[in-house]
Image (tube, rainbow, N blue to C red):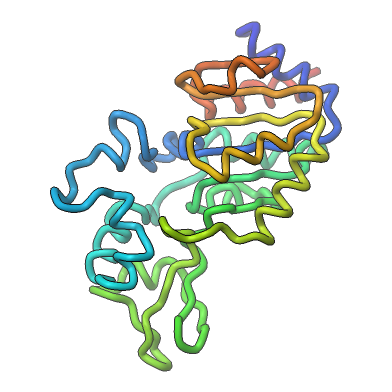
Length: 248
């Protein structure tokens, strides 16, 4: 057993209020590409004249919804994705009474699919879609299977995914609840995040607990402040650590 995995299990054993803060790296083991790795969405040559950030911006959604939904449907929707070892381990940790909340930058809904209950989705979710005219709800599958710009079957207006686009502000209610959870935590585990996306990454500034753990394949600028840094796949690390915790 890797010594760092054992240290993580020991930290979790003596922690009563754990919060997990996760980024795109949490879902890569579920075959959902991250945004900034060498194989990520931001490095694909998808459209020579527009960056991926622009393609999922408020401006493109408003001015050219055909382009927006073409990119969105083919690059951000993964209807066959399944929870991986990290998602499952976190749901298990919550059932143990250790994990009090998950704060995620991901929009894929895999934490809930794994069984987690307290999840703050600070960038929204692909599973919530609403008509901009009458507010009628639509599931992700409706958007995925629609040919072109999805329209409401009742009023004909565009259906918008409940995600935060570039140029838009975050949901302040969700951010407030996430901030409160992090403030109350005595252990904060950061997994699969490069911690370069703000204001989301700024939530770490509110952690005042005893144990800061960073699990990421590559170094982050917060590593120097952490009690434990593990440069490995978070889906493997969390599964092994929670398995070991169950034996302690």
